[in-house]
Image (cartoon, rainbow, N blue to C red; front, side):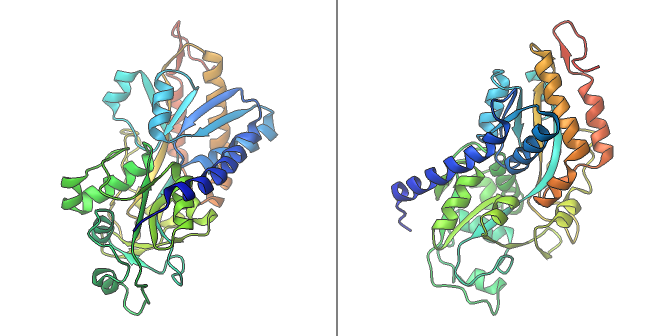
Length: 349
């Protein structure tokens, strides 16, 4: 499908600018800065606004994508980075970082198909792979029709929308496709950035959502909160147990049930077992340096996340994220004791 990228891009920039301003303005002139994943940005912005109201302390979080967030924390231009692609324990040690999860959410396929209601269209992992590989090019394809008997599918070209930037959401999506499709694993693979066979690139979850909203016949992937806030139709997905499931807090929790957080925070939650598991579930993580040149800044950042752990669960659930269990929060609090200043003293008493 031929897409007028210039025209759409102008429209998206206006919308993206408004979204960006809405996210950073509640914090004002920020004392603490963070950058990274767009996956949790709606929640971090809500938490920052509530935290500012409760304490007068200011947090500025920039939704720039997981890859950019990781680069910024590594060179210490921000107080914390955020990514949905967790680092291995070995990589953390090499980089001198710690990571901890904040919430769990779901990555959902979204479509712009007239007459198709949210949650009505059924897709399998194999179908998703074939669509994003460019093998399926029309919405009335026999393979889609076979999973959706009785659903009126339009004779309309498929317009694939994917991320243009390095993204933890892309990591979760491509990790899942690599698990369910040998063809995808061989030709594309997984990562925060991949060599996409086809598609129009949008910046951030917000960019993908805006493109899909504007393009008839479009399909993309975003964190669930973006699908709901943009009133976009998400799909069902057939999970590992062969069941078609809807994205929800319950199906995200089911996917995370087997995670062993006490062993490591390097947990990948895609394609998990269980009749009720959402197959593209992901935790999102904060990265900070273990040895801090600016201990007061580090302590203030950790104060914010402790406040969020204690006071932010209700807002997380309202935005369809799953709060971390208290047992996991307790492990995180112990981890924070290892964050030290240049003399080796903990930054928090």
